[in-house]
Image (cartoon, rainbow, N blue to C red; front, side, top):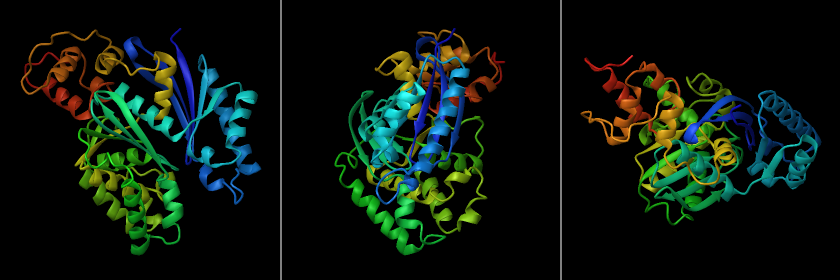
Length: 382
């Protein structure tokens, strides 16, 4: 039987389950996922605790996820609790209860560990060598500096989209100009405490539901052939344009935006402020969207060990295309060596096989270039 694990992520906004299956050479295949918008950070009471009603809802949800994961023949269920549970004074006790009552491996992770898990996912699923991983959640935001495929340092800041919305934008709909100015000032001041952000070079990869939402909205405006958003290149100006348009709309009108999930309608403006500020202060013109997050980081570690996958591209080719990648693929005009390897592996597949699901280890624009090359006259494809 293939090895499978279930991972439950208890976030500040959403709580979710994913079940993953291990493939050859570090390939990770997501077999199942589901989630609920519990918004735990908004449930914390004046005494800093999650009240009984919220605790009951949380345990009911997690217990249901555990049953579902075990029905899919997992070898273990891992639970990670993040910012809201760190904020709640009874968070550690609740995590301990989950271990005892549900028979899972539950951990309350630090902001530093949250960032490292996000970076681990990126290094295992995208061809990132140098740059910054931005993990934007509901309660906190992590920045992770990566050099030569190694994590150098991390920082965690209380700049989650849900937290910022509640603190700065909840009082007006649409948000007032003064509220937006206060929010932008707050975010920029917080980012100025990260001295290595402005002078960084390389790629910027954004992890988290808010970044995925901006990617989905962009893809709806300019249709892309792929059936997913992993590795999608999102222009910084597109984020700024979307954020500015959305900030002028009341929530009810904003809800009709194609690609914007209902549970992110209120927080998407605050998220845009954070993403735009990181792009500007970091000197990046665009970012890549990762549709994989800390759940995948937990799964990679559980199934393949603590080090990043040595060759994510080879894992993606073997796992998705079921062939061993060529060591020296033939030259193809207009394609890089990494793209040529994918081209050679995909020669006898239909192009849709490349586009339907993520190919681990490749940026989305690389996959699209390979698909275009395969479709040129005279190619033996499909």
